[in-house]
Length: 156
Image 1 (tube, one colour):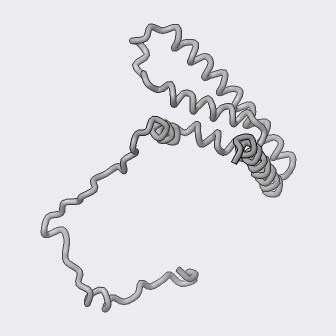
Image 2 (cartoon, one colour; image 1 turned 135 degrees about the vertical axis):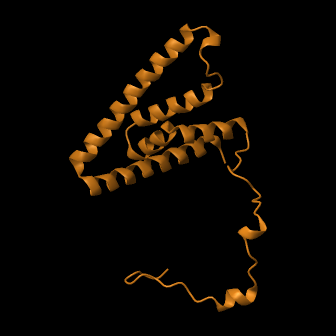
Image 3 (cartoon, rainbow, N blue to C red; image 1 turned 180 degrees about the horizontal axis):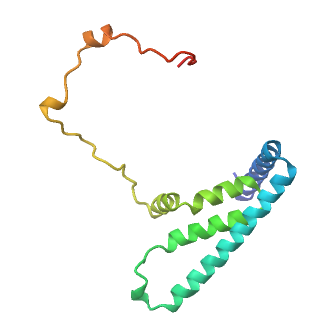
């Protein structure tokens, strides 16, 4: 597939998603609230771009050893992309922009871009003392009565 066609398809799909998101927000909140929310997210993105600009200007003025946070340039770039997505009109881009503003999302995305394998937290092997577990045989599993549901609860 040609790269220009791929870009055109991606832009068309993005436009369709943005239109559907706007229609959904208008249905839920109403037209005036949707417009106010759209303007509010744009102002939030602009304020954050200003904050990022002032932070970058301050950081560039400091000597290299005093910042204490080296290697966060990629995460800062991801945060800037999130701010730009907030500025763009549309609720789907706002949702992605807000997600990119979350530190945990930025860190995982930066790790993926760097090629680091994100390991699951916690042990892979759990060591238990002999008094902390018991063996379950197949016979015991078959005799176990089904769990009771609360009254009025729907099917599981």
